[in-house]
Image (cartoon, rainbow, N blue to C red; front, side):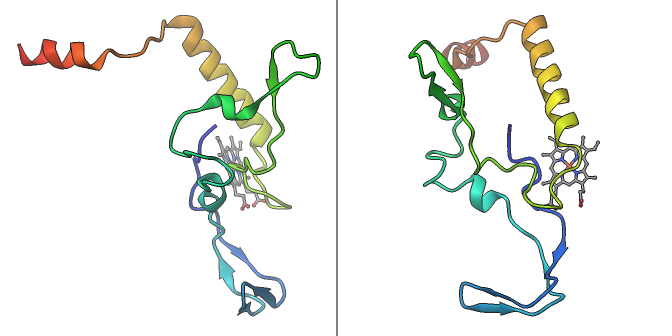
Length: 120
Ligand code: HEM
């Protein structure tokens, strides 16, 4: 899962809000930035690296791993206005990825070989 909608949808405060010493009066338009959480080094070290293991934890019986519940993983937003299509999107992403790996063999690219082949 990635940070697909980094710039969230527009929201508006429904009452006066105090935030980090600032006052946001009722009716202020705000755009919550999901990336401030999704790219937070303290929550997700090396956030730009593809590390699926960060979402895995050891099973209680010690045999293998299971998917960890991670409250900070919020690509679909949070609260009452969070994405209505989340479950559909998750299924689509699963089917897309599963079919991709089913049909194709995915290998790491040996970059130095490619560069050599191109330069000759
Ligand atoms: C990977 C795919 C998707 C991602 C990452 C995503 C992410 C989001 C995010 C971040 C929001 C804003 C939440 C907020 O305002 O706090 C949103 C809203 C929404 N999304 Fe998605 N979305 C995805 C796919 C879909 C799909 C497939 C549908 C419908 C079939 C959908 C329908 C909606 C709707 C209707 C809203 C507005 C909800 C509201 O304001 O109450 N989304 N989505």
